[in-house]
Image (cartoon, rainbow, N blue to C red; front, side, top):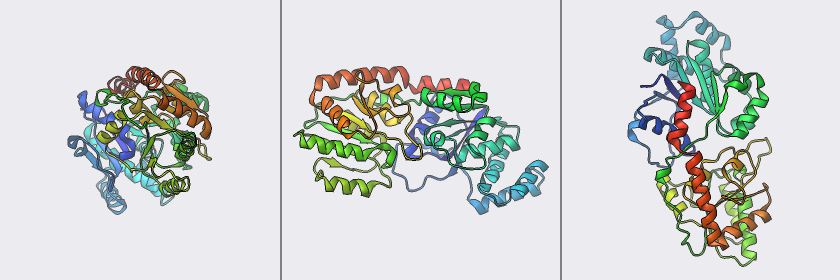
Length: 393
């Protein structure tokens, strides 16, 4: 048992393996926090989830059932007059379901004697946790990740109110911690950096035997991952007579656009978009690769990567990483030591960096070994989850 619970928007989720890993490590350490998920992650790619954890997730009811549940609780006198007044006053204004979800979860936390709830992302789950803390003697905290702080959505309960009300705000990088502390100086003492972590023993070491060199990229097919620049860089490598195979694993709204770009540049034999793959398959691809590339770029609205888990995974596999100077990436990838960093949108520099690590196997091994050692130092999930618990307990 643990004196705090988790509240997620969607759990477990293919695109948020770092959340699942955090919970799984807590279970391994003997904690079994109750897990609430606002949405059921239906129709997602199959993953290697632990059935014991998935069975414990309490999925919140859909709107009609949720409202009926809260009304029944109100009729039975289980809700304080202030809660009923807040529900009536808010009415059907934007985000009204967060209040009802807060009542649904808060009542169950009270019954279980749990006094704290932790959410991931400064989004739907954190806004619900905000109302839980308003309605019940339960504190809340949240882990802020990337776009949720760099380009937050506009809601009446926004990032400022959540930071103001949270007992603890966790974020993933020194970059993001500094960003939040500068924006909310009166709450600086509540804002803490805890890196995401991995079970480092799960990852095999890269062999660098691939011929031609294998370039691997992993991420959602969205603007901020910069995969259009990787495709342009690959076209430059072809012009220079370089041989390689590039696989970009993931799914997303830009898939058709990226496929069209690959066809336009006649790169169908060099670049593949195999779609999303389970974690064990991705680990195997990393172990067989020559280099990992993530050419992240800032989005027009300010959204950007912060601490891409896939870079951790590549480092844990002993691969050199080629990426960009965006968000917290320079805290992970040390230029000329564990890989190469280039400016966002610079396809020429990106091609040059990829060429360096794929043409010189001894350099690739050296950079990859340094990255592996850095991953052991920074990204041990056992150590990082203990740091998180120290903040929440």
